Image (cartoon, rainbow, N blue to C red; front, side, top):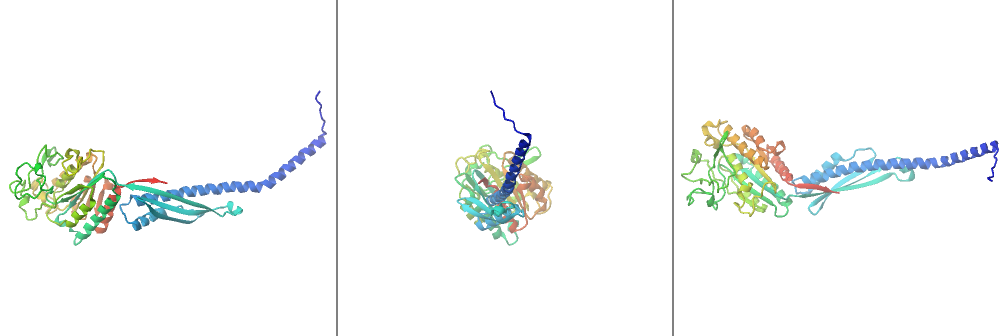
Length: 429
């Protein structure tokens, strides 16, 4: 039999009242602590957001420095700081935000610190939450074949600043040398004037034998007819069609009879010895006018797999897709060559030393064929012949790869950007 206990109604009401009072007392005592804990959670959430913003700014700084073509640590630090300040969190509760770049082997690390002022935790004696984040950017230049076609004609003197132009080339080459790694980076310098000098060792490419006594290493343009382009140039190897020597009795036009006609300095490369190209730049002199489509055609042949093992490096050029293939064309577009060739008088000349419509169109045709194979083209237009601007823009891979240079300073910046474009960069935190 289960016993039952009878509790008077008055006593039960008193018990419930006492329990309510006790609970209220407990809650009242615990409420400040509960509110403080909730506030602390809010402070921590604010700090977490600030840390994410700080990390984004650090990432931007590290990537900017690593993507630069410069190898001067002072310049890299200034650039990184600029990007960090532009992206650093600007909240009123952020204090003592600082950042700095450091070198770790070939990598660059940007580290930043700061404090977030608290609203609730300061009641417990913690007025700030410390933050520190970093980002490390790996950078390297691998798997690249680059050909630099440099206009060395008389008009490219930048006034009296040709030595400064050489210095700008040196800076770019030094950047490439510092950033390149392994044996998978090859560079070639192609001095461009009325012809391209491939060197007197390449007699096997010639259609006549023996080589003429006055031959200096240049070949005549090997023109072929394409629809709409009767003087087109191609990447056909010499085994398909050999070349005429630039020598007495073999000239394709009367251009060779002009006093300014020039076979320029010899091609240097392909090579992974960047210092040798720097020496070649030092030795360059300015002579002649220029045939730009011929310069680009030889750049193409230096990159086309159809010319594999024709050059001094075994298994060079690589197959398309194995390495990045890049051409940098630097010219002011002044030329007299097209008054005599690529249509001559029928080529719609823009005037003396201004080139012609047909000549420039044939340059674009060569560029288009190269781009269809995946070759990247940087077109650097040095302040000069305005008739050539639109054609240089068409020659470039895209608007980002077209560069207008008005003075030595902008040339230095432009070449630095091109060097930076060859760098592969990724972040590790």
